[in-house]
Length: 618
Image 1: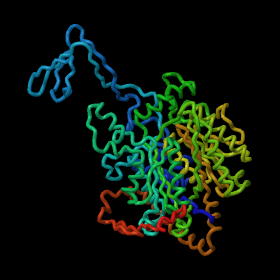
Image 2: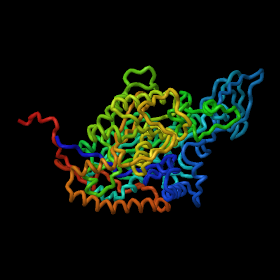
Image 3: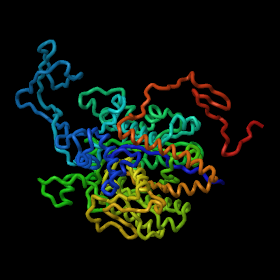
């Protein structure tokens, strides 16, 4: 069998606590202290534009990006609203009050005596017991989160029409990924059959804020109305639906594969499989998560999963009156007390190698495979298991088959899941140590970017993938900077953990493994190949003249990518959002025996059986 098509990473975009993903700006925010001055200034200019600042204020930007105290634009952590049970008992005399008749319950409780006092009002007397819910406030025990840069509101950049925040972020991420291509999407779409574009994107939690499932579940409880948008916009695959319907106008394969915190890699696997098999020539892979609200955070806090102020004080020996350092809430592989929740939307664009060559697409790297394995029988649904050993070993073996033993041992990096929990620091470090030992690696560099960004749940591995591309572009491995010392129970043989940024030779970094673990035993490890390895693989497939043609075409693509970045920094580009645009209906479909025509698009129906034929026509 001939070589399969190689899934090449040709574009990426998104938004997280570090800023805009395209042109590696979010990555640069992580390593800003180690950058040359010109690159550092350009990224601060990009962040200033995102944050709506009239001029670059580096101090403000540094303080209002990455993990930090939850800001009031999300909710007031000192005064969280809730309803407290308020049982009453009449003490000899009935409880009496006046009320507008419109607020009376439809079914009057038997303990109530209701007397009309006017056309609009009534008097209520309650004898015996009655339970009320009393609106009140309380202090939230978790006060840190990885938040989008202060002032950035994706819903204000397009006609968002009360979309949940996660979907607003997905529109921005998909638009950013399109711009990062340096190609005209209409031109790409003309060269690719309409059924050969895949979109796989979702949310592990669904849309849980007040415009989605959160609003639907608590509306009646809070005496409000349930709207027609709550239910459909809350669905977990809705990020893919939005990209299809409002950004790309795609008629190709779509959906979302959910694996808790490994969801982005689950979707990446679908896209890779489509391209390797030839089912698709283009794949958009994404995830959007917007979990910074009291209800979702309280769910994770009830599990003991999140870093609380009390836990941070205990780690740092602070008194009850002292404020902990929320910037250092997430401490992977150190003495820690829980993970830090975050919001993020990321999207990566894959082309098959032939399309990338034809269009002169920039090759940011390649994604040859993702391995997924469950944990088997479990003692606890949230506890770690053995499946991650399998995903890591298979990913290593797959890379070895491509680049060989020597390059595998000397030229790799692992992007650890690195949540910042006591359990993760022991279990994942052991998995990494055993993997490095088995494959003969002496000192395997380990990155753990959640120390900067927090844990964006289903989007977390999307953050890791786009960060990996930044490492190849800038030759820097982000340090685990929130850590003063690594914990004694962390397995460190064969691993190179560092709190400082490390300079590397990008040409000597041949691959990165992106590791992700999810509740329920969802383990995934992706292998990424460097731009240099990607080019070497393709130069072996194509002639010298084809390669020179790609180089010439790529010059124009890079110019368009630079122009897009400059326009974004200047604030001249809005997200791509097409509402009620180019909508096709029944009359636009022409059904044929060998071909289906949908509007201007043709879909071949000449499908060969992969199983042979049963010869029933004889």
